[in-house]
Length: 181
Image 1: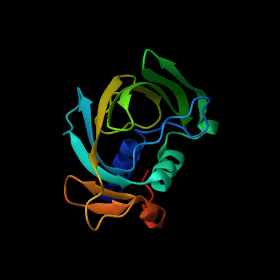
Image 2 (image 1 turned 90 degrees about the vertical axis):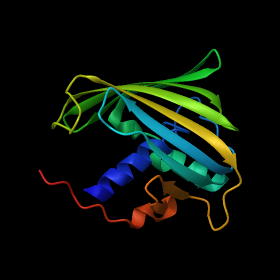
Image 3 (image 1 turned 120 degrees about the vertical axis):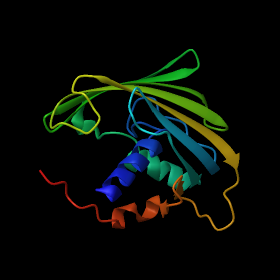
Image 4 (image 1 turned 180 degrees about the vertical axis):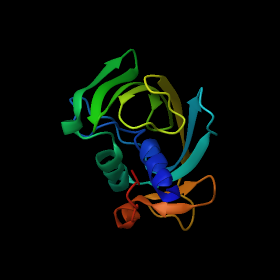
C-alpha cells in the first residue's frame, strides 16, 4: 500500500504542468531543469509534501501524457480556458461508482514558477481514508524552477522529501499490488 500511495502522490504532483494531453488549449511545457514542487491539502490532516523533479522536453511531455489527468473516456466534461492571465480547468470524471468534479486555477509562468489551486469533490464509490463523501478537498501546488538539474540526476528523476528517488521512465516497471476489497 505504501508504494501505491507514493505512485499516487507522484501522479498528482506530476499532473501540475498539464491536466490532459488532448484538450483544445494545450498546457505549456515547463522549462527544462530542476523544479521544486510543494503540495498542500487544506482542511485535511495531511502534512505538506514536497519533491524535486529533473525534466527535459521529452520527460516533461511524457509526464503530461501519462500523468496529466484522467483519460478522456472517463470524463464527461474537461474544459480549459484562459482567463485574465490564468488557466481554468474544469472536469467531471467517473471512476467506477465514483464521480469526481474538479476545478483548478493555474497562474504564473512555466518558465520560472506557477501555482495551481485545485478544488475537488468526490461522490459515490467506496470510502477513502480522510475523505468525507461529498465534501470538497482543496489542494495548492506551488512549483519553482531552481536551475539546472544537479550532478548525477537524469531527466525524469523525482526526489521525494523523505529521500526516496525514482525516475518516471521506470514507473511502468514498478509493480503496484492490487487493492484488497
